Length: 166
Image (cartoon, rainbow, N blue to C red; front, side, top):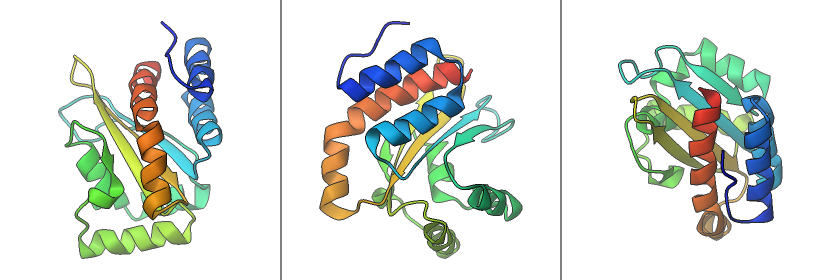
């Protein structure tokens, strides 16, 4: 695959994408290179089911992943619900959050998931969908500035990660 243009950290991630088939290694590298709290990559195999055979790689703590699965939070998680319906990247501040989802988000905060998030839905020509999300402890103006400087690179990484995950 061709290397991505951009910042030094984007080129480093690009090299990993070119040389590695380990999506787990890549999600950790993105987190570390961009100074994020967490990254998560969800791959849904088809457009038929929202998450018919999910493939997930994340830097979230095991305690949160276990709780999330045990409580079936995927059904009310506004990021997952919106992410597998949308086509364009979105800042989590733009989500409409139900009371149940607000409780989920508060619980996520207790597990240090992050104060802010950004998600990139990817749909390929075969209608396979994935969602790449990043979280940060930044909020407000700091988060806005981070996205202004890095959103395009995160979109590019999401697209490449989608193909790597297949």
